[in-house]
Length: 265
Ligand SMILES: Cc1ncc(COP(=O)(O)O)c(C=O)c1O
Image 1 (tube, rainbow, N blue to C red):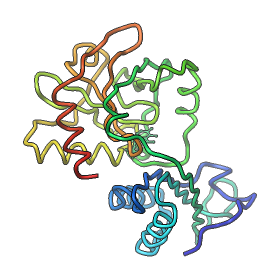
Image 2: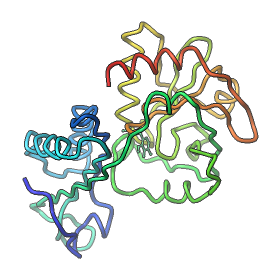
Image 3: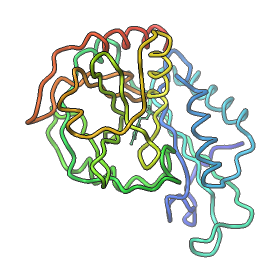
Image 4: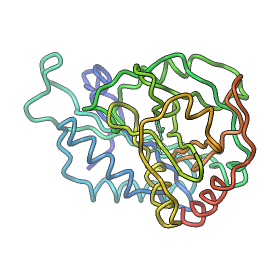
């Protein structure tokens, strides 16, 4: 397996968003949560029927890139490659892999403790169960949602679907704490099932905390005792305010989960 150095003009990733990606944190020369990233990639490839035979090779190549970078972000893009007639995929696709390296310092637990301000996005996500959960390359809804604000002090925007259900944030998953229970939206209709979301659910299980994937709406957010967001680069970020609606003090359960998570990342 080789990473492409250039993008072919006929690549289906460029034409149709026909592909997948993974954005991974690299710390101390290793990719954080690599098995979870690979698992989602394999799941996505199966959903899109993109042949993906060389997972151990991809894993080795990512590990090698992480070792040489030390700390930063790796972005793997996998497309169905070039060819086919219009939308019709080629009979024998030859996937293309791209790897982008962003050496940079990643947020620490101290950064993550500060808490963030989020807003409500006007854009609503369309439901499409076949694409729900996977990290495919079609991200226009998220581009438009992120274009809704420019204020530096607003870190994220909460996204709801066309039926008014809470789904996630623009580049994070969302958790609520209600009466000691951890609740996160079901992602069977739309949204990205984050690797950090899965890790937090596993952490909650280790700590013996009640956690559920369920249907949630804006009222649930407004009534929540604690709210936090997760993604692979930031881990857990407590929400200290929903702009124009509500503020939260630092939450005990969020802090417990942060410590448990960071002790293992
Ligand atoms: C739309 C969306 N949801 C959720 C996430 C969180 O996913 P992960 O925990 O895999 O970083 C991301 C990450 O970029 C995202 O773009």
